[in-house]
Image (cartoon, rainbow, N blue to C red; front, side, top):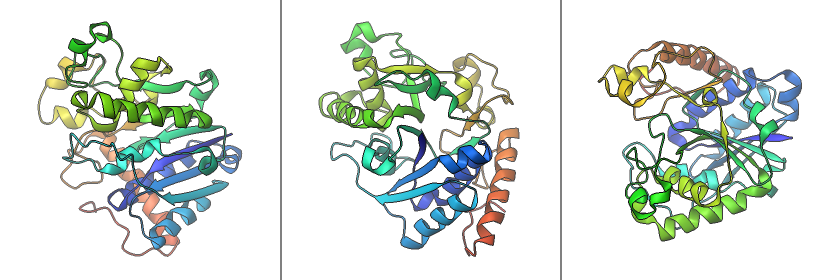
Length: 295
């Protein structure tokens, strides 16, 4: 019934493997066999693609496919400090590639703890499921979509969603792609957070969004508290780790596989999971697949 979609480049190969391992751990054996994995990439080599395929099969997924493709020609990288054009590939999934009724898109910088298929049960026709962004919760009240609330006052205070995890009907993907493309053409001056801002412009215009509970895309906030106290002013909930979260998202430039990342509880949990993943990878005969800086 569903496929998990990931966009992975060479920089995110190892985190992508860890994400696949977490997705597999979150499902029953039957769900893994019935589920699929679809990967889009700009630059993975044939050997790296084979490694992803072999790993997906090893952890029990019944179907795997990978394609090389290019992002929208209208793509705009307003912030390229730690994000690449690969981020725009999330809009390039198609029905003939996915070959399942539903697509669950997942970023590669996450720790999956629970079943991400649950929100599919409440998804209506032509809707996209998304979780409200914890650092940019509302239009005109955060840095995202600069100037949009002044240009369209009726948008002020409307929810702004994070693009790190998305749920949608596969046949709805062409509409999302066209909507994002139009936003990039006609509202480029309001793009700050790259593809995520473009997606939100389309969601605001179309209204085709199904809010999903925060635990399905919970931000790891402890790393930011190591550098300052601004998180307590922005995030409505307690910034402490949420053990009930189905997914922990390591947004921002500091990633848990990097040696200089602050060592919070969630980072320690991620690294344990990463080491288990790499043991599986080594059993497949892969040599030299290690995250930079983490031992």
